[in-house]
Image (tube, rainbow, N blue to C red):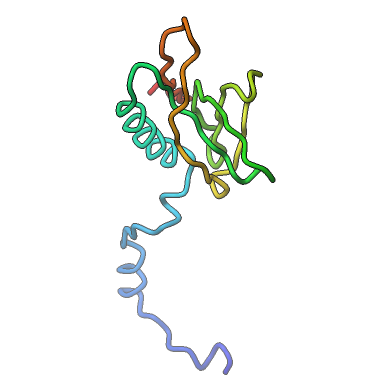
Length: 127
């Protein structure tokens, strides 16, 4: 089959197709969209914890399981998520492509004599 075997669309059909505003999956894979979804899930989980527990993330795609106590979530458009916090008592920053997000939210004991920390959410547009 060669190109001359395909039907040619009329100009009215082409104009009609061009006006379709498809809600395609690719419109929802950007870091800002993922940020809003993660923010909602993390805040809901955080709200369910008592005063003695904070949110931790068990990340399982680093070749081993790593527990991170998260203090801030942000993103770099269009496809990077940035998590800041502590791993094994040390400051840590995880920069991850949105296609590789895979973690478990879990409660962790808060540090004694310190107030319960809440995760901060920072955007580049001041949201």
